[in-house]
Length: 310
Image (cartoon, rainbow, N blue to C red; front, side):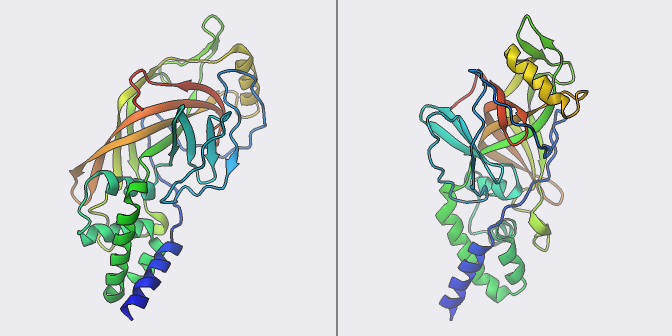
């Protein structure tokens, strides 16, 4: 009987792995990307990337075994918001949105947590297997076996949990400087030692343990060890002209383009607050990309930090 119950709980857990969308705040006035329909323009330029192909990847998968990128492609954009990016000739990584599900997995993997802590496993289950948690947590006898199953799943999949993440935003470009072949950034939009992000994350469907989250943080402070300094965005004149035409179909006064930080988490340190934990995340920026449209399409400029590590 116990074996049957154990197996049924594993199946229930497996069926409940659905992705959740993040609720997060950013420094430097970055806001969540808007879903917009943008006309298809192909930019014939060496520095502009080919429009990425679409795949049916689920960003919530705990085993991101992505196929290699085709030789001509620099990136592949997936349905769930993740992006597979070529960082070097033999370095291809998949970057995930910073929702609580993805961050909780990275935290369990990199923070050196005690997997014998039943409360921590319960919180991890509430975040990652919400349906199974809701259906079984109130019955402590049933949940006892479910907890064991979830702990085994964590131990099995631990090394597959992602360490690479992306943060999206928008930025306003200034006027085009023909002598520098670049859009200038004014004082309010220039990147001057930008490398701090405040993330406040929530679990899907309000799935939460009875006393809240005390062992897995929901507030994260991401600190880049190689912050960004950038006062202009180099773009060839032909592309700049087409970009302004595209912007004119949206709101020409805003003159906004899209920006994405791609980074790797190095480690976590935890600060205990009154009723919860806040995690300070040390991370390394691997790429900073500027796009003409949402969905990480039509690459305009790829900034790489001089201190970038691969």
